[in-house]
Image (cartoon, rainbow, N blue to C red; front, side, top):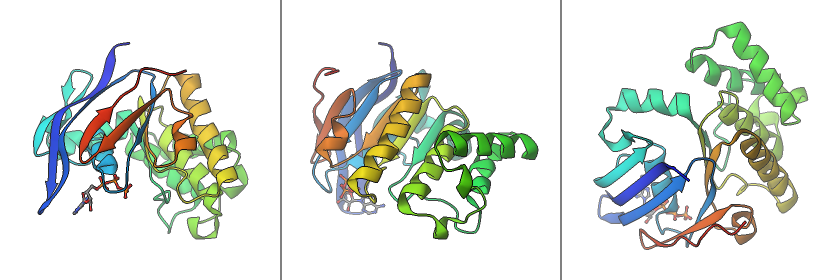
Length: 226
Ligand SMILES: Nc1ncnc2c1ncn2[C@@H]1O[C@H](COP(=O)(O)OP(=O)(O)OP(=O)(O)O)[C@@H](O)[C@H]1O
């Protein structure tokens, strides 16, 4: 499998806190990977570095042939919007916009015109079973509905990689597994790479591979288990 994402000896410090110390990993195109490990071990920071949200102090982040850590912020943002989809624990939807607008705006950032963005947004809300939520604002959605809308937003532009930080962390186990099933189903269908942070072993078990982080480093990347 050709590597799509790579971290080499990545270090990141926040003030006096060392979040990552020499973390290295490689993720292949189309792989579904869970990053697990104890609270505070550096999972989210590693995910943010891989997604080009955070720039490491040390080491390299590669997306294909591109050194993400060497790009200026504008170029990184453009690349992220075009190639990546990002889902956070609490969805991260814009509260003032309806569900449909949240998805459509992300598509318009990617260059789609308003009409096409609206049509694609509705199509994706339908695919994720929340088309009836289109006119509803995030505050009036259930946690499971909001996460489905967030998934629609992350997937609608056809990203190469979806990064998900505890995507089911705010949901009960039934809603969580439903949302995870939708994410992984859509990703497998399209060959999309998924990198998700989770502290939940049951969620990690759905991945092709688990990468364990401890004390800011990758301690274990067992071989593909599926
Ligand atoms: N923006 C930040 N400012 C200051 N400290 C930070 C910041 N981001 C992370 N840290 C610190 O870096 C360390 C690693 O945090 P990180 O969120 O990456 O761990 P995690 O494994 O994802 O934790 P959790 O499972 O609790 O979310 C922690 O000590 C955290 O407090």
